[in-house]
Amino acid sequence: MPVSTDGDRLRRLCAAALVLQLVAACARAERSSSDAGAAAASGEDAGATAADAGATVASSPASAGDGRAGDAIAPVYPKADGAPEPLAARLCDALHALPARRKAACCGGRAGFHAAAECARALSAAARAKAVTLAPDDVGRCVEAMERSLEGCDWVAPLAAPVPPACEGIVRGALGEGARCRSSLECVDGLRCDGAGPTDAGICRAPRAAGPCGHSVDALAAVTRQTRHADAHPECRGHCAGRACADDVPLGGRCEAHAACGRDRRCVDGRCSDAPLPPAGAACLGGLCAPGARCVDGRCAAPKAEGEACARDGECRAACVRPDGRAVAAGGAPGVCGKRCAAP
Image 1: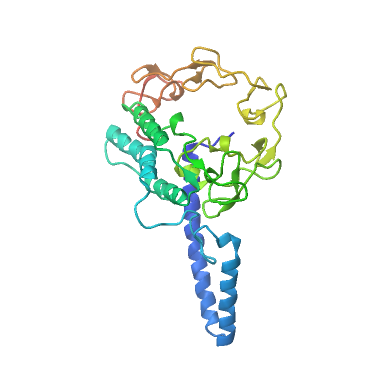
Image 2: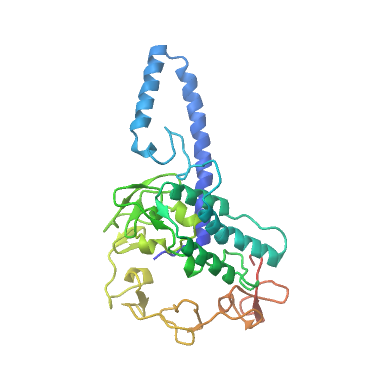
């Protein structure tokens, strides 16, 4: 069960991009130095070296199908000329640009950084390669759900607006087992893209019983905000624990974390349970509640509306703020639910 937030994934992806730029610069410098040395070699030796290098590039599996050549380092979804696919552009605008525009309208100023263009570029590349499919009806439902979720301003918080359920699971993979892939979203349900990362392609494979897990960022899943993609494309047959695949704890077995119990199960009072998540008004189950409710002081509750009294952020749709818009201090005077445009 993934524990990182959508913002965490985007930050990790941006960090990977920065590392990519630094490595590329070093590679260019190294190549320049090598070229200077090669100029002193005989013409025959230089020709043999070039021929050997060309043969290596042509035969290297790592350079096939992922937009790279030789030792050049590039994003796994290469840059492409031309406009993005219309359906991809529409989905990515709703996931990234729309929240940025609405937040700017609520808080004043201009829309800040968002990943709509990167999302549309990568998703278009996957669609043109026939590695993924998008259904117009699915995209339409996601766009409508995003628009409803962003009505008013009481959703505004420093972190990204949550993705509605209608937007999850709509990027469907078309590649079978053994196919070269760039994201787990490109693989059919039940398979994951083993070895893929922001700069590396992988292979569609079945979940592993043992071995490492949780070490890479799925570039396409991050920019399309598919926060639950691991449900359909798990790395492990059981669950990922401490960066290694482990067997799920059986029902009734002792546990320390929800993820240890497996999909659609949770750890309650130290034991794995498949009891349904409780709705608003009921007692929390292991600190969890059904979608649309959250655990507050041991009971599930619907988020409070804008202007209602609160003592902490968890009671509100976005934030619990003072009249001046600043955060309510722990143990301090209560505030009201409303927007928070910047981090406290």
